[in-house]
Amino acid sequence: MNHGSIKMKKVAGSKRKKEPWPTKKVMEQIYQMKLWGGNSANFYSGEGSHLPDLVNPYIDVLTSFLRSFDSPLTVCDLGCGDFNVGKELVKYSKQYVAVDIVPELIVRNKETFKDDNLEFHCLDIAKDELPAGDVAIVRQVLQHLSNAEIQSILLKLTNFKYAIVTEHVPEGIFVPNKDIISGQGIRIKKQSGVDLLAPPFNFEVQDVKELLLLKLNDGIGVVVTTLYHIF
Image 1 (tube, rainbow, N blue to C red):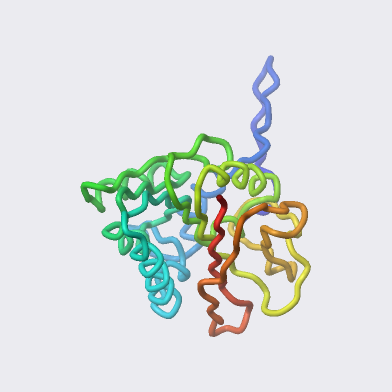
Image 2: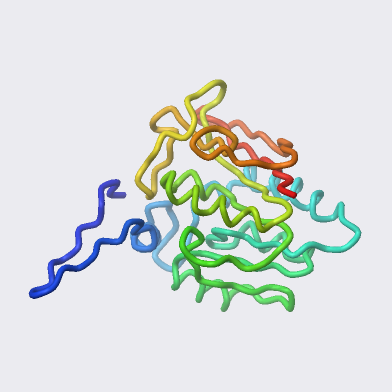
């Protein structure tokens, strides 16, 4: 993945404005070039969405959360990827709205996964208005985004009662929220990780609860899933 800015071709006689967040193009390139793995016939969102040791405990805690309510919740899955994880949660929701930034991925998901209470939308969650819902799921998405994009997303998360955020971070004490250019890599390469309660985000919530912490076999950090009760 090129962590530099994407170069824009000059158009004769005009000045083309450079996108401040060219994230859509970056994510399209990741899937096109199989930078997260997979074969030529598949969209593949990486081992974090497929390794049973990471996926199964996550599905268990999310299922427990969703089933704890007398009335099913409307879930917005922000950055649904190849939907290998989300497909296990649809049956526990009133409505499941899955969102991703890559158009071809959303077309494939619509063709592959069908339920009466399931819908897919192609949106840039940093730029576009988000669907309404009770709980937002943001699973290993923010770790790939710049601080500016994260801040934009957090402003929209205040419209949800709950947010469940999963991040790959260093184990132990680390300096949070070092800025990056959006792309394939994450802050752990800088010995950093996303902490929504720390500056510059200072995400204000009613309550916070760690739902799951998983150590990776390669020893490079931990994957933490946190429940934020927003209002």
